[in-house]
Image 1: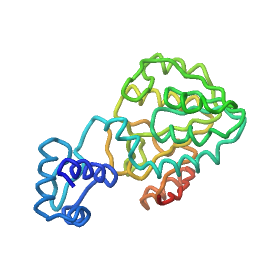
Image 2: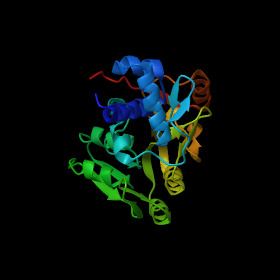
Image 3: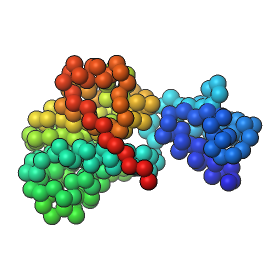
Length: 257
C-alpha cells in the first residue's frame, strides 16, 4: 500500500473511532511502528490529526468535516439507525427531516411508507423521497449551502414557523456527556431549534461516533427529545439521565457486511 493510501485510511479510522494508536495501526497495515509514527507526524503537520502519547486524535475544530466524508462514515450504522427509527414513524403522519447524512438514511427508510407529508430543509432528502409516490414533499426555502444541499438562515426559520407537524427527526454533529446536541453552523442550529418548537414529538438519530466529536453550538438537550436512536449503548451516566428525562433510547443492531 502506498503512503498516500495509508494516510487516507488512517484518517478514515480516526474519524470513525475518534483516536488511533500507533501499535494498532502498525498491526492493521502490517508495517513498522516507525512507519506509523512518521505517517501520524505527516498528518499532524497537515492539520488532519493531533499527536498524543501513543497515537493521535482528531484535532479540535470549529468546522465540520466535508459532506462526502460524512456520507461515507459509519454507513452501516446509519442505515440500521434509520431502519429502527422508521419503524416508529406511522403511515399518515407529517414529519420534518433536517440536514444530515443520517436523516438522509431515514428518508431512504421511508420509501415504502404511505400517505406521509415530509417537510425538509435538505435537498438530498427531497430527491430521495421523490421515489415514494405516496409521500408529499415540502421543501422550505432559505439560503442554499452548496456543500451539502442544506437550506439555512432566517428565511428557512420563518418558513418552518408556518407549519405544525407531528414529528421532527433531526440529527446533530456531536453529543457531549451532558446530553447536549451540538453543531458547527450557528445558522443550522437556529433552524434545528425552530424545527423542534414546531413538532409535536421529536426524535434524534445519531451514531456512536458523535460522542467522540466536539462542536461549539448547542441545539438543545436530549431532555427535550422523545426518542434517541443510536447504534451503541450510552455511557452509564447519560443513560441514567435519559431515563430520568423520559427520553426513550433505542439501540439499532448493525449488520456486519
